[in-house]
Length: 202
Length: 191
Image 1: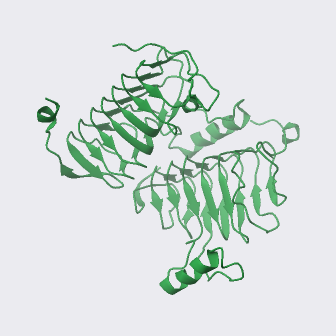
Image 2: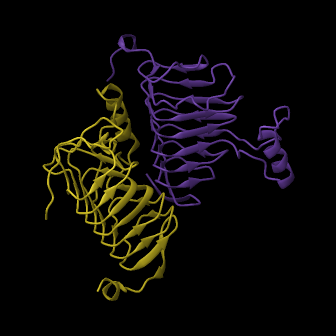
Image 3: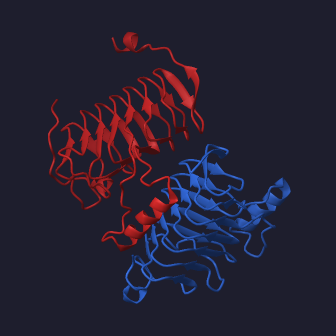
């Protein structure tokens, strides 16, 4: 694995920020802007990892908490995804992720209104006025060769199997099997696709 | 929990000059260049926000006669508030990224009326009055959580403590402490 840490500005960046030190981007990967890290605050040794030949465009936001880690495989195309991550979000190789897709491994708030009140009171006195995290988390896994349409939401705890397609505007609540097409809110399997990958990839 | 309000800063918009008919409580902040880009209300006290709110990247798209009211300790991020009539939001309400709340249909239902509306909205329609468009107030009670990309449509009242799942489209009233998901939004549990 030739993933090297980057501590630099992106020469083409319209935004004046830098890539945080604990973000690993492969030399061959393209990151459009450091703006994607505006909300990033992971304290792990490697909070984001972007693999060989992958691309993340403007509109992608790494809203990663102190204990969060996002990894994107090789040759993945992320057009604009919002990663709300407090534990782990993993995107496999050859993923095609469209615009305005939300991946969340946490709701960021408690289901209990009394707990939410405490969070909101803490927010109102916090230095940056950002919502404190601390709600429960369930990792999200997206397999290899998955295509996710625009405006989709992938909810906490979901695993999407290899080769599957998620139709635009779907809300994925339950696991998606491999080589399936799912769509809808909530998303349901609407078709199976033949795994021709072996023949094609040769 | 909170220091006396007298020691806190008055409410402010960090990225511009607040319209005169907007009133913010102490320690409330609004962030975002485009917050009032589509704010056209001519009402007195068109937008009244309580104390200790954090409103990030919110679009306050209020029509000429619209009035919106937001309680204390709310947190909205990149929400879109489309209001032609009335929007009442309680205390401790959280609205997620890209969520939309609208109290209007935007255009008439009938095809003939829609043609009249298209003409009235066009650059040639300056003198024409737009036809009547359905609008009903939206009420969001205390302690409601509205997830990212959720949509709340006109006339809906969301009961206290309810949890609206990401991407849900809510077209009907929601009883207190319900968990709502899907399109159309269904009650999928209690909280």
